[in-house]
Length: 349
Image (tube, rainbow, N blue to C red; front, top):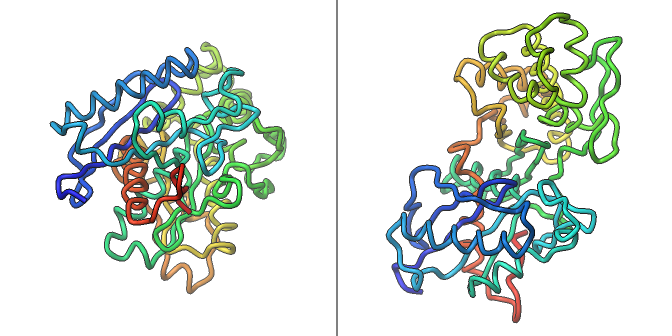
């Protein structure tokens, strides 16, 4: 392979596509967040062209010719198969019927004319966090990540590789049921998730969980609060800012989220026993004092054996806004060392 070969990483979300460029024999060439419109609400045909525009745009930013690109890493919100086929029931931010069962990886590969490797967005961020933190020891370590956003994404990395499972659904930590006793107030209803589960981690630790479950309850405990004057969706998006300012209602909301993630990590400790637990997403893209308080609360509510507590680290996903695109690029670069399967790109496992 040419010494000046490159890989492009594309992190496709509901409104934006962030992108990066990685030298196959070096490091990332883009050192800040670069985003382009994803246009996914306009349907697959428009979105695929928007992704192609992002691909061209990021090469211009990095000063890299298209002919030097040998592979592309792609991530999107799930649920999707390990080979990038969106769920037949739709996926987060891809709810229109035209997206149901859409073969995302294949269509991007066809449009760009390059091998494309696929991960869901939380797995991509988890992979980047793992590789960045452990460096040369990444292949000897394991980690678990919880990515808090509209939903609660997750990722399990073992010996430096993302665990995707038989159908690509491994690491969907948001839909793991967690104990609610002691997490909820005595009169607080059991939260319900968009997926239909009651009492899973996402029903608490997500923006959707704030909107549907936590904020409506805590507003009854703080009558006359300023957030009461806003539509609940807008109020939910403002809760973090109130939390940064020490507002008691907001801190109660985020304490419950942190406890939920701690209980989720307790389950992971008994399944994976990882070296590191990462927290990412909007909840930690906050003022340092709030971010540190949140992570400390997660750790305090993760029950570990003495040996585990001496070994495990609790960390924030590094380069948070860029983690998805960078993880996707790392996955694509890793694939270059694997003999290709005729007719398609093998998924990262």
